[in-house]
Length: 285
Image: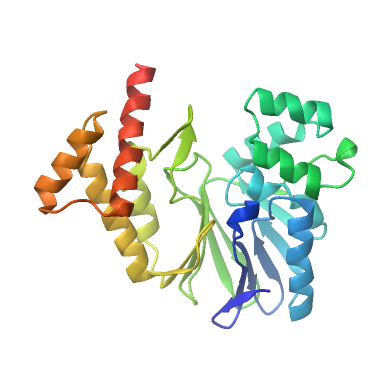
């Protein structure tokens, strides 16, 4: 079932147990825009089934926020839509297009850690005719930003700096003050360590905060208001400031000295993630 924001924006909530991210729908007077395609053929079909119930203008565009599997593997189901990606996302999707999805190939990708076990399981269970499956190629490739008019409904797409990927696109609907962030505000996993890229934290926040938004849609969260996002940024920034080395004990001590209290659960998680970033930096030197 779709949830609604304002007059023209709908979203299918995330399902973390199935690694299904939030999917968006923005409706103008003439056309509709879908934001992210889902993690599989079945996820996309479930979304399209819900869209059909609304009797909205035809889906003319599909915007992909970034090229992780759970956001792109449903692309082929949006046959009538022009697929929009930034240039870096397109490069990664072209790599996906070279992959095979038969059992033997999937096992090889899993062994080589090119795919997670959940990705493989989802492909097996939710993509029919895998032996011939190939992602379609994007139709519109943009650099920087792109403005779409759906008919009295403007959407702004922008590639931003991100702690999650180097191909993160966000989608802003100015008259509704709604911002779809995809996974851009999250960290990422490298060498089995979940980390936030410390050098990109403040640039990312700067890129996002320039938009006057009252509602934020993240890939794997419920909808957030401005106060909730401000708290998220505050906790991330305070944790980042406390981390100057690969020592978690040192980071916690610095945080407690600065705030005269122990870190809460979120702050401790962020401290560990920034320490992991320091560990990864030291490993690469």
